[in-house]
Image (tube, rainbow, N blue to C red):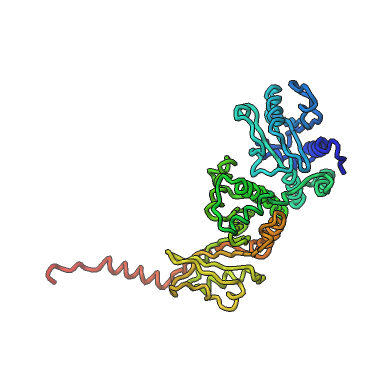
Length: 436
């Protein structure tokens, strides 16, 4: 594997050299920075780049990408970090200034740090620089995930390209490369849990609160990539529209929710699934839950019939699975375990015996106890529970759709001829005289 010296330059050069060789990979990666890769697109990759304004070895980016599409040429400097190394804001700022001086369109950073989108960055730079030069970020795990999904889909037909793709997948999987996933919460995670256990009031400005939310978002992004590999399709993290373009505002919103609800939440969307997967880490109860909602079938009237419709889709019983029914009006939701509903489908019935549930929620809840407060064990359990929920529940649920309309029964010839005779008789019927 890679030697400790110059690991960043080596892994960056290996990755960049593959983009011109595997167009499918280039398409998936470069589309996140607004570049479309077609049959006539030319991609060039360079390493050990020396530019104007580079007065020392510290100002030497790891690479340069040049993408030509017809009459348009787009270029980006590439700076990579590996292992536990973090991006340096001052260094990134210098590279952006160099890019501006050399008419280069963007700077792309690559590290083991996670972001929600490529146009978000782990570091902050002056907004004035962003007016002339774009700043993007990819995590190594995200790049590895794109390779996994491409291989699973089998979209690379060329034998040589498929061989290269398989080799880069094995390369990224080897621990010697320095590609790392998010594996533990911050050191203050235990203190945050202890404060909640003691019933202490959480302060929005407290370091442990901010670090707890920031780490949860890191795990959310890593978990999204793990789910993508698990199902072989790109999984999306659902973020409120007003927070999508502002990581700072999203962090503040997450802090507000944690202080108010003592919970950390995330939502994932898996392609073609019956609904979004909602994940909730309840710090007061020390539980992690995953749930999915779907509308009850409207062509079935009784609660029993609607519950049986749901039960037929859930193949395996699990003591952690809970079924909730949501009712019209202000009636509170009712719940029962999956196993109990097998024996008595009407156990979910509300106080109103004539009402029927309009929505079901299938939830898997696991109590972690002491493991919840462990910075590593919390992550281990989250990454075990969420895929397990999809395997037990998510992959089996199907959204209800109204049945197609039945054909209208044609009227018999006798009925039609009878109507015609009646119309003809009424046409020649004499009018009644007044007074008759």
